[in-house]
Image (cartoon, rainbow, N blue to C red; front, side):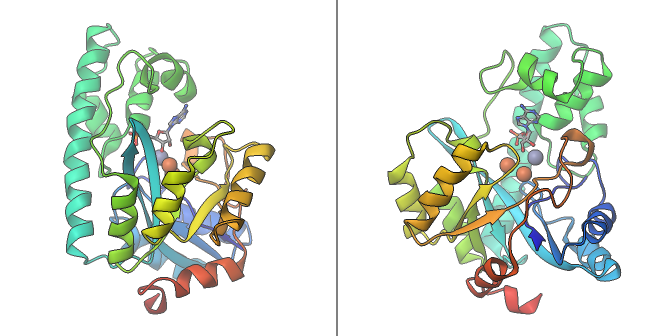
Length: 278
Ligand code: AMP
Ligand code: ZN
Ligand code: FE
Ligand code: FE
């Protein structure tokens, strides 16, 4: 079994690539993906750490996209790390994340939280800045009890300081992954599109752009929505993946709490150009 969605300090997780590899080995997994937000910077260390730990490394990225003001995440596995268009979008998103991070920090300061950009930059370290870094700064300042409270009180999309990212349409993000030789999977669809109405037109469009799978099995999905998105995948010939979306101490899930069977990973690998090299 594989855990196909984990984060490290190279985005908004709190663990290192070495930690993730060791945790995957301890959980008895055959393989683990690194899918940091909008960056491939952790790949080299994760590849070496996985080799040392005796687990297979699945190189990945979780690309930010946007549809009707809603944040949509597209997972790309075995993309070519040298692909110029993908690299350019990661560079653009890093700058865009800094822009919107600074806007949110200004609003938080105006609300008297005391949070400064310098504090956030230290917490983010090498990562493209994300709301979880702001959440940690809010907790450190005592302006929120914990990460979850920082989101409900301040950072949620309908919260008092939220500033959206300017990001690609989901179809463009899928095309970017496919053109970089990767296998594209829609991350946590039930938490992105809650409720009974499936965005059929969007799903069909993504499939036409080369989407290969839906991450129906995710810790944020309840049983009913997991089933609904499994059915949505089955009726379109899409693969179903499962993953923890591990963020270290920022979320209460462990590596390996949701997994993807070897056969599904093999089909995803075959759908990519880069899979054979890793
Ligand atoms: P961003 O990409 O900067 O918009 O931040 C999105 C990230 O924030 C997601 O990948 C989640 O890891 C995290 N996140 C979103 N909502 C919550 C929440 N309610 N509680 C904890 N983490 C959250
Ligand atoms: Zn995240
Ligand atoms: Fe996500
Ligand atoms: Fe994630």
